[in-house]
Length: 171
Ligand SMILES: C[S@@+](CC[C@H](N)C(=O)[O-])C[C@H]1O[C@@H](n2cnc3c(N)ncnc32)[C@H](O)[C@@H]1O
View 1 (tube, rainbow, N blue to C red):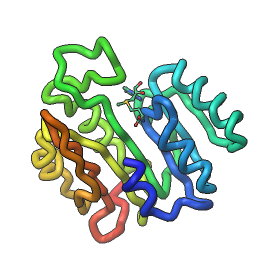
View 2 (spheres, rainbow, N blue to C red; view 1 turned 90 degrees about the vertical axis):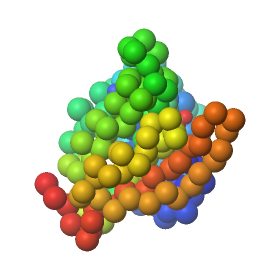
View 3 (cartoon, rainbow, N blue to C red; view 1 turned 45 degrees about the horizontal axis):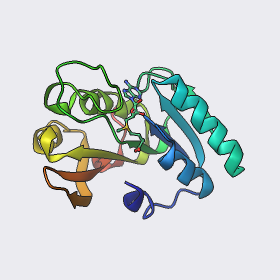
């Protein structure tokens, strides 16, 4: 994900890091001069990233939120490395992704059109276990490309890049 982010100029741009966890992506963008908002459903993560930003001497906005629920703005760059392991329940929110591991990714994609700038970019990490082709096929409003890949012993991770088709926001 960081490899993919590093190809996008973010200085002075508005960046949203959804499911920030340790904050690695949001903190990187803040260090690169972006105006960063991070969210996580886990309040411990939100507090941790706020503290890490202070330690690193950068500012960002950290919000506890179920995906986009407490975020009203649009952003130039939206990032999400979702919990993507197939699971029956959501006991461990860091990894459990529901059926085929793609529930969180699908909810993210449904909310993305109202949180991405007209000329914005979203990066979404998926595993081959998530049947990425079917998720891509459902994205009629977006142009989707794979911008980074890495194979591990039981899966291939892919970073999808999404932009509005024709660069026009639909909502
Ligand atoms: C796979 S971890 C990614 C952490 C970090 N962004 C990274 O790339 O290393 C998924 C993160 O999504 C968060 N998360 C799970 N469900 C969420 C939801 N409904 N809304 C927001 N964040 C959620 C988890 O708490 C966890 O921090």
